[in-house]
Image (cartoon, rainbow, N blue to C red; front, side, top):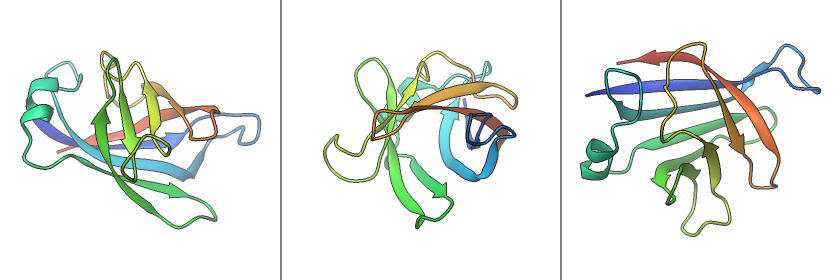
Length: 119
């Protein structure tokens, strides 16, 4: 298990046909040798892993990575009103070139590409 810093950038959408590096998330989590979140290590962590959200035209947001039953989410305040669920993160590898879907707080689902995964 190794703690890695992951950068996700918005992948191709109708509004951004080439994706957008100005719409991104950066977070740090423990990964196993397959690039899957090491759930035991994450639960044992002294502090919750932090996430930073960068969105063109909006101030940077800081939050934490949390378990939400079957999945994981980015959360910025206490309560689940602002949680952004990450589809299949529980069993999906976090390796450059992989894609994830994040459900925004307004319910929209956006694709993100893992652009970096570094120690």
